[in-house]
Amino acid sequence: MADKFTYGKAVQAAVKMGDFKRSREVFDLMKKRGVKPNVFIYNLLIVGLCKEQKTRDAEKLFDEMCKRNLLPTRVTYNTLIDGYCKAAELDNAFGLKERMKNENVEANLVTFNSLQGNGSRWVRA
Image 1: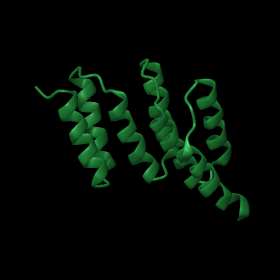
Image 2: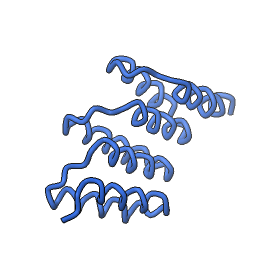
Image 3: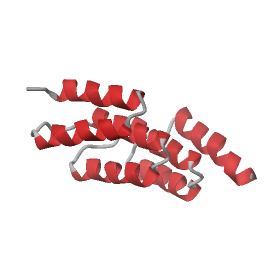
């Protein structure tokens, strides 16, 4: 039977190929078979969704992760913040940055580059 590592590699490969449908199928199969996804696997899926500018779906996964008592990492926050900025959803990006602060997850250069670089592009437009 496949373990978390095996499923994670399958999800990662599908995301790298740009096949989000396949990555989601693997994720759903994993859960169906009783293998609990970890933060790394959720992060992979959130990356894939943000690349496709499906920020609502990425947000749902973020919320699901939290409901499963998996704490979002700085990578999780930064990925979703960057996705929001690239989709011109600046209120959501800055709101998530505030949540990050409230959850005692320290912002870093990646956080600020996303907010300044991507965000300022939309502010100027």
